[in-house]
Length: 189
Image 1 (cartoon, helix red, strand yellow):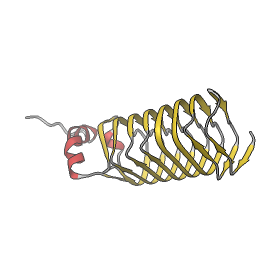
Image 2: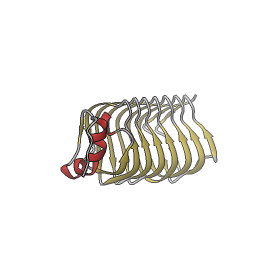
Image 3: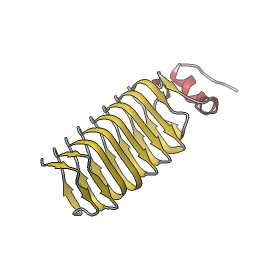
């Protein structure tokens, strides 16, 4: 619950509780943690570089102008978060939850994500560049300017909920069976 301004950390305790804290113009570089709790925290103009974490719990957090680069995160929980001008670049994430998040101006670039959960998220201006995900859950997502062209996804849990998304021709061809099923179209050879 503390307020931190222009602080720089290069290490954290294995279990770090920063829940409901306010971090402004701060930097975290090269830290390794089991669990970083940012539940309900407010991060403004924050840079996180090369972090290795088993779990980053940031439910209901508010992130504005936050950049996460490099590193590896087992679980990144941003459910119910408010995100504005956030960038994830070069991060490997096993499980990322953005369920019910309110997202504006999110860029995910050069990332590898195991499972990306977006159910019930409200998305305005979200894009991917040279990224990959095994599974993407888009159930109930409300999207405006969701650009998926830079995301190579193995599967979408609910292709029918991609309304408002931009896809490449190749992606649409790959998703054709799922899109047909979502529209109630039977495809028989």
